Length: 184
Ligand code: XMP
Ligand code: MG
Image 1: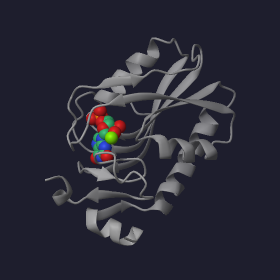
Image 2: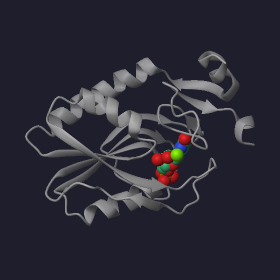
Image 3: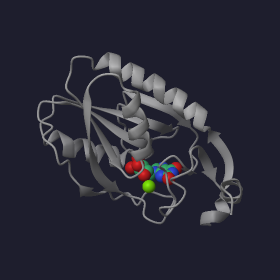
Image 4: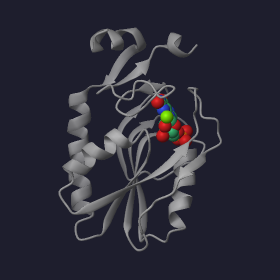
């Protein structure tokens, strides 16, 4: 099956094209490079959804920085958050006194970000901010101050560019709304 057909079977509508993703990520990288100039910056990616975003963003940031990853999961084989976030992996580098930006694929209920921020603060970093590629327009269960937001979308279940349904469709280079028949 060709990639094109694969999309047509499962995607209702493409919301953000690959080009638009890369353009916006370049803008975010520019802002971060300016804001964190002279600071010890660590990007901390929430697995696995933030991985594609992390690598593209990191390559576009023009100041020295490092990265680490944390594991958190709340969805499983579902399009609704279970409301119960489990940390599956802590950072493995020393982040004490460093400036952290959490790299998250999507700010939905906010529960994941809340739990990850609480976890990272235990390590005594100098600061903790969030860069979310997507924010869903909705009332979040946990209201989080997000310093950098890539795109705002309606409250739809989306996949691609790291975002999955049951681990599938992460590799699409765009973000699109998943057809309801895929999960109903
Ligand atoms: P919360 O609700 O904790 O959600 O803010 C954060 C995590 O939930 C996943 N998520 C989605 N995954 N399409 C996805 O593929 C979506 O529309 C979606 N909404 C939330 C995602 O892993 C995110 O990190
Ligand atoms: Mg997920």
